[in-house]
Length: 182
Image (cartoon, rainbow, N blue to C red; front, top):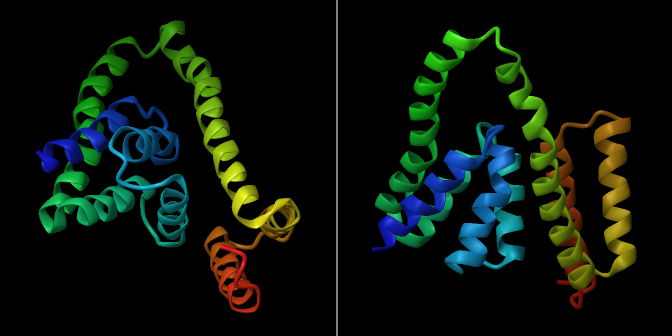
């Protein structure tokens, strides 16, 4: 039964997550945290941060890791397959349709219409992460980390993986000096 749940937890977001891995992350979070209760939001955000620090597609890394934690090696393979299967199936179907109707205005407007929905999903997930950060670290520390990360990524063009590594070191250092911060 766990393998079927792992399959559904990643297959459904794979079908509905228009825009790739980042767009499906809120859907995966809903399945993993809310639907099946395999992780807390905090644990999910840690897995997401670790996955973002590694090379390759985020959705497949998360599926392999979460599948492994819930069902071992077979669970990892099921999660990985469930993540890529919708893309393969839909890519074959959509390419046939898009090639046939590529000049129609309705086809050209699909991306324009779906983008605001993806923005809302990512915004809601971001707000949940901010709430968890404020409750765990406090408002000032969260603001410092938010502003610092933003400046490093946007102003000084530091690679996001390096920003995550810096944040991990800061978290480890503050945990050593301030054991009350968790």
